[in-house]
Each structure stands twice: as structure tokens, then as C-alpha cells.
Length: 102
Image (cartoon, rainbow, N blue to C red; front, side):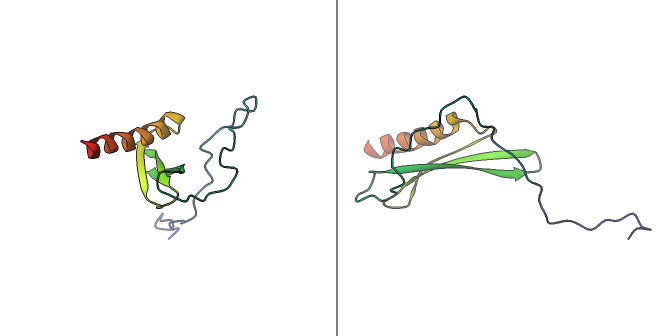
């Protein structure tokens, strides 16, 4: 392989830091106090963000899930990991709700 100039493919991925904490900013309040249980639908929603590595760079996905039904109620893709991405995921759910109410 050395003579031919070929190298093996490494399946290990490097460690990537996708967020930078504002050390002066105060942390967001824990409104659910770590009690992730709901007794009915649409009582408690949770959101999460993740990154998806692509050849062109990272894409970010924000998902909003209903805790009771465990169904995705909203999602959004973006090129930056910002709070507006989560707001967009909430807005996709609201627009779907208004369509179903018509």
C-alpha cells in the first residue's frame, strides 16, 4: 500500500465542537424540573437539536416531540445551530395544526 500510495480508510470520527457557551449568560430555567411525564397529549413538548455531517459541511436538525404520544410534532433543518431553528420547528407544527383545523 505504501508503494502504491494508498491509505486505509479510518472509521473513527474526530471530535467536533458545535456550540460555544456564553460564559456571561445565565442558563435557561428548567421549567419541567426534569419530570418528563405527561398525562395527556399536547401537555408537554420537548425539543432537541443534532447535527448531521455531510460532504458539504454540517446540517442541523431541530425536533419537537410530544412527551405523551412520543410523536414528532415539528421539525426544521438549517445550516446554523441557533434558537431560531427550534422556533422554526415550533412554527411548522403550528402551521400543520391550522391546516388540520380548516
